[in-house]
Length: 467
Ligand code: NAP
Image 1 (tube, rainbow, N blue to C red):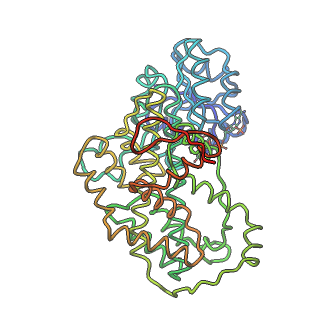
Image 2: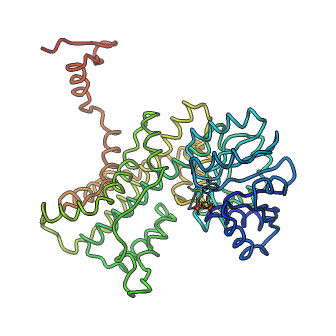
Image 3: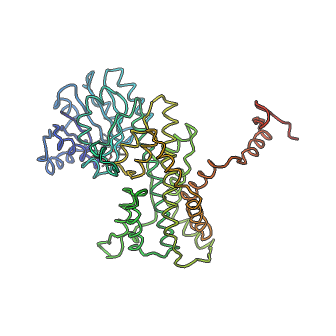
């Protein structure tokens, strides 16, 4: 198998090495020539690489039908590269493995299909290490192109981690996602779930630190223990324990205490919220996680306000919240995944992608950032295993709910923001409330805008002259 890779940044270089390690001959190109030369110097002997200094070279280096993976910055850069690949021919395959917007992917696909060129928009998750050792791959678009590339992608993708049953351990984290921009859409939703789960863990750390008065080492131990929990175990918990233990080489203190409380966010976080609005799906935990990052950037304001508007709570020193937090984290994590899958399901219906949620849950069980033991439960539920559904439902027992509510209450009482724990709980409560106050909202809309309302006793839309 031959593959061209354009863009030898963090991800492109590691995916090129991954492909070469798995037997492919890989033609490599980078806009800045020195990066390609450095790549060849450092990794050139790891496999069969063909160095290319122009885009024309890369097209000449491999045989038709050519498969070329573009791993450049998302946005206009992708269009520029496609535009400059002048001598592409019918049946050639282009794969965009960056975090592109799914609507851009669909536009590019339409344009390339006219020329007989196959286009795959492929979500790639796993970061630098995953790209090299096995990412989770979410390819969507041309099925013909996927079928051609499947043997290589199967080799490159991660095996299933968090495989509770040995029967699936041989499977790999790649599947054909669906037509159009569905591969990039699934990656966007993956990233949205990632935002939610990361923020939940950050809030748990905040409570352990400020209410539980736990040292970093103690919190690290708690996260490591939770990571052995048969329901909670996840990659993000695993790395959290490691992060809290890490020493700063300079100061010899815990590195975490020397990191500013500012988290940035890139395209996919915003896109997932936009998509939820577009398809009319509630994803409050994910939205709250995005807001939390935006507010984290208002550092100056936060510091000023902390002096202007002090709040001294009756801190219950050393209160052990750990068990309540473990339960709250589990339930809110379930809500976060559920929101992501709900968005996938709704978008799939509207776009006619025919997404297989069972397969998506499966390929997220390894390689990617949101991999966790819970995804096996979701996979089983989507496969129609009712006992798993009942088991998941049983996690929301009254006792468990009380613990979750206690966590959110402690945050409120002590003035500690818990945007994702709170949003998840309200989401859960709203979906279990038979009689919401939306009757009043509907009446208000009709009062000032004559938008109409439905009655409980008669079908149809009604309008009242309220004054
Ligand atoms: P990176 O390390 O910043 O590398 C960016 C690459 O894009 C460089 O090779 C750069 O070439 C090239 N590039 C930028 N503009 C270009 C243009 N106009 N024409 C040609 N080449 C251009 O980025 P990365 O982390 O590998 O990410 C690549 C893609 O993967 C992005 O879409 C990113 O969102 C996505 N992604 C990243 C991760 C991650 O963990 N980093 C995970 C999943 C997906 P020069 O060297 O010439 O600047």
